[in-house]
Image (cartoon, rainbow, N blue to C red; front, side, top):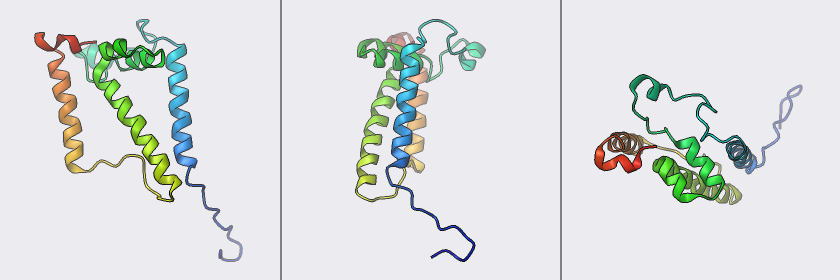
Length: 141
């Protein structure tokens, strides 16, 4: 019970956060579907690419997301395979989060600790380097 003069906190429904994240993801997907990032400069330019002339791990990610909203998996993989894998991982993580919240667990969508962070950063670095080599050029955006 709240002290006199202090408003009692109303518990927030456990699905509010997953619903907000889902709505934000859907809004981004609609934006990327409607405003095509395949047109150069539509969303600005990659600062890493502008400075180095080499693509960063995210280069092609917006185009990949646009291709996914159009159902073109092959085109999405050609734009940025890492972004496609990340989108799949995030979709699965979101669904599992909704299920956990529905069952009453109050946790976050994704929690990365020590080794997982190192693994993710290493995969991104390797992806970036490989896509710049002649034998990994098929990964280039």
